[in-house]
Length: 316
Image (cartoon, rainbow, N blue to C red):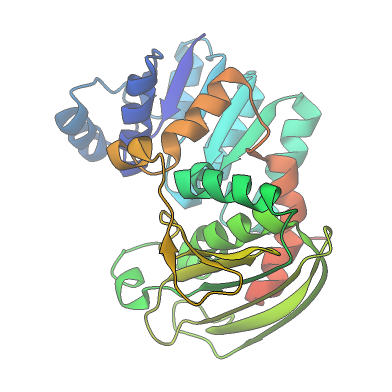
């Protein structure tokens, strides 16, 4: 099987690391010399330079590809691969800058018969794997609460394009939102309220809401981006409350007790590589899509994201 990693930035480095650990051969397709030089210096691996479009014009497409370019280039790169006949594509989350790009990519992939998956690597964390086991053993989730605070003091230092920052809920916070609904089901009923706004995220700075999922689980959430904060997720079953903070860790409070207990995790892969990424890539390569987010699923979820974030998605 032939595999390309498209991009030569930090996420491409992380994908190259796990592909090397799995033992799958791959080529790296880069564009600019600066990122390609940095990639080669860090990994010792060569980068085919000149950009994706030029490479596709000169070489046959691979059977599979991983798209690890910056957010504002994800949909374009994935679209080029779809049109070139690549059969299976893993694109970094969220798959596009906004709902329009994601829906267009989903339609393009459907029309061309190409499988496109979106890389929400937190679904593959050891903490989440153990939580799924406990939730199932307890008879399923009962309720859930989560927060998607952002370290806004750091976000503004990232030097990202305005169109990326203005959709930062989709570009970054959707990690924790996706994980919550992955565990409890997606909203069948949703009441969402937003207020405020920031120079770089004018749609809103305060978010809160509640609802019920398609599995009958009640949930609530809140976030205030006017001050730095972190992500937090709690899932309640009949027997315990599971607490993710940070998401890579897992604590629990057993029903009838007050103490938080640390849950032992088989997390060597998360410690040795970018957390969740090796499991995600392994599933992608062997065609095990049970935990992966398809581009069709992501397109369907965009309405929820837009409502929670206060975005005007512009989709007709």
